[in-house]
Image (cartoon, rainbow, N blue to C red; front, side):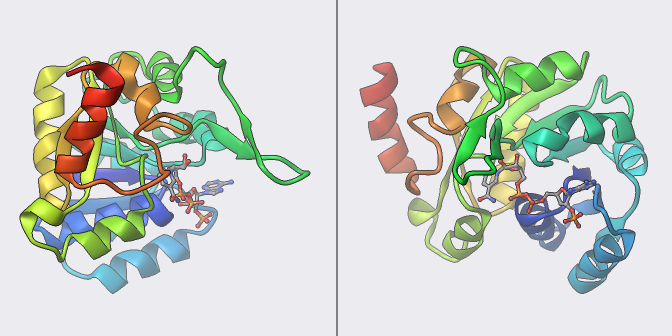
Length: 214
Ligand SMILES: NC(=O)c1ccc[n+]([C@@H]2O[C@H](COP(=O)([O-])OP(=O)(O)OC[C@H]3O[C@@H](n4cnc5c(N)ncnc54)[C@H](OP(=O)(O)O)[C@@H]3O)[C@@H](O)[C@H]2O)c1
């Protein structure tokens, strides 16, 4: 599968590398330095290239959307329309405060994913990869299957969700279904499945029972 990465830092760089190593074609984009993206792609080697966000969007069957939340509009402006594309939203809707700590950038009753869906009309949005540090995914990918990291996922488009579930397996995680995009707020900080701890699939099912009753 051709995967365009928009935001190639901690999350985009790590997940993109895991996909490239699993045999997908990955194009890294969105940086203040095109040289940094070229170096990242060269280090990964086979299956990785770099380009502009518009080039990554054109190339992609699936887009991993992983900019800092305060750069979401800038990243979308550079990418152009993502209508019809499967877009995996990894963001948490926060920025750093000057006094330290973090500041929420969307209303309390709105998720970052719902905000991004409005900014990307026609995109097939899937929330995933926002609930843990990407280094944990890489570490736990070495474990036996039942001990790997549960990657919570929420989307309204079931066909897009199934494709992303397979990509989660390919990156070494275990897909864990949290229902529709409305539940993206559970995966984003400060939701019950956000980055407070890392969960195996078994632990994630127990937490879903406590939180959602099923
Ligand atoms: N880190 C985590 O543990 C984690 C976990 C889950 C979800 N998330 C969420 O996932 C998203 C990405 O997080 P991250 O930790 O991967 O962020 P990051 O490491 O800071 O990466 C951000 C990306 O944006 C680029 N960028 C920064 N400023 C830019 C600018 N002015 N113009 C163009 N590109 C720019 C960076 O490239 P350059 O630095 O090369 O310019 C980099 O590619 C965030 O929304 C975050 O909340 C993070």
